[in-house]
Image 1 (cartoon, rainbow, N blue to C red):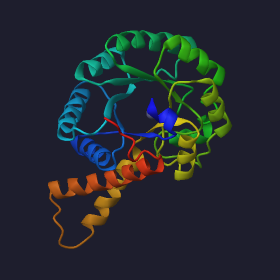
Image 2: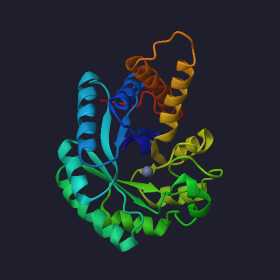
Image 3: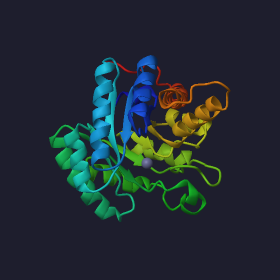
Length: 272
Ligand SMILES: [Zn+2]
């Protein structure tokens, strides 16, 4: 992966609908930045996500984008995502014991690789921000286990837990940079950071500069969209019908995403 050599990070925005997919493509196109579009869920949600991405991929032919299943659940949902056109799948078995995590992930890797689809998996556990103070330490990735895990599963990139959390943090996030350094020195596949939102610009940029190649973002992007909308509708005489408001939401989401592309030194890094 180019990001590993270039010391930059690829933004992985979580998309929810056609508006957020369009925002991701617009930012990628404007900043010539590679983009990993993260979509979670099951069933129709995956089918629709793949259709939105295919639509905008045609509209923005110069954009380098990968569609990745985020936190892939049951085996069937992972297979559906691949059938719908996802070219990458993340399998989260991080709450299972090590051996079971290895077994389930290796099974998906075998099928996915046969179909040319790359696989991300998680070792250690990135928890939820509301329980950050209770779970932060217990979930950290063990470096020796990480080496064994990568070797036995054959995954293409590894989501590690170095002190981030999903959603809004309760407490102040603090990252374990010595642990990241150790993981980088031992594991030679790209490393992924989940729970980018709320982690702070300094922490995230430092993580990227020290070996994280993909940063997942959700809460910060949609919150910024909401802020833009709140500000917009508080003004007198503006058009508050759906299309106008949707455009404002998209602008907020895109502005925050652009900020992270720049923070991770990814501007101009897309080569097609
Ligand atoms: Zn995650």
